[in-house]
Image (cartoon, rainbow, N blue to C red; front, side, top):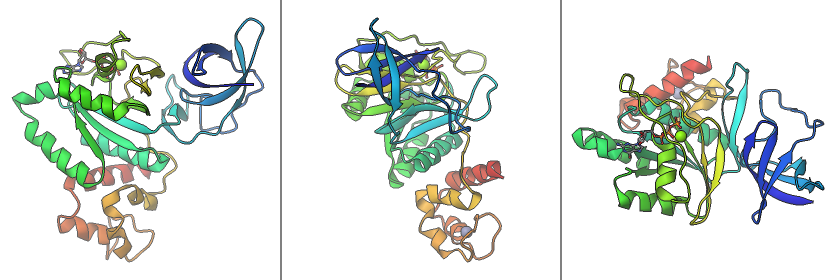
Length: 302
Ligand SMILES: Nc1nc2c(ncn2[C@@H]2O[C@H](COP(=O)(O)OP(=O)(O)OP(=O)(O)O)[C@@H](O)[C@H]2O)c(=O)[nH]1
Ligand SMILES: [Mg+2]
Ligand SMILES: [Zn+2]
């Protein structure tokens, strides 16, 4: 039996990287989805065992248990969640400071998703060259807030070699994913740090300042300097899965201590009396943007 890692899926074929070669594998029909909420049986990043056929292709026999994964809302009118990428050392949320504009709500939803799936998150703010005309102070505020919460925070620009070097160091010898809205520069950053690739990048619409969904499927790209990076298609929003309203604050590091002081242990911190989280917010110990994101997410869980 051979072992490898799924780095791309195209229709019914899976590209499996064994470390020494690439084998095109198929998944025999007997594989069924036992988890009905998930729409894809195999995800990019999965470790599989396969048998080799006479023609050099492979048949996938087993899928090893995933250490972790990130999902997104299924596309093409399917209901449920699609596993975007699995077995990650870290997931990098990429947003641009402008074109398209950074959204704190997106950032916070991503962080909650990572906390819930036990994936190490990293925050990357790209297109910092566009911040020279305004946005630098805002970025520094964000840096202060998120590093104080314990999150890694990196600012990048295609024009700033030093920032690209920092990015390389962050990704070296790890399996990481770039996840974020369309047009923020996920693919451009990969092209900039590894010259072996010339992946397709898109233009930003002058009208909406949004990207055009240039990357259409997730793939795991072996990096020349060591490690893998998953380039993923732009996503509009993260759905929050399998979280009960009272659990949500467990995924906000700054709420962990204050929630100990709530009168009710199922407190959702939006209307209950004697709430430690609301109190911490009023005392300025929880940032308004974060409490706001919390309330928005809570709303979407009901
Ligand atoms: N000014 C500036 N533009 C950038 C930077 N990085 C990327 N871009 C531009 O942003 C546009 C979109 O880049 P892509 O790399 O295709 O974005 P993406 O996040 O991969 O988008 P999708 O594949 O659609 O999800 C391109 O025109 C890039 O040249 C940057 O650091 N500064
Ligand atoms: Mg792309
Ligand atoms: Zn409370």
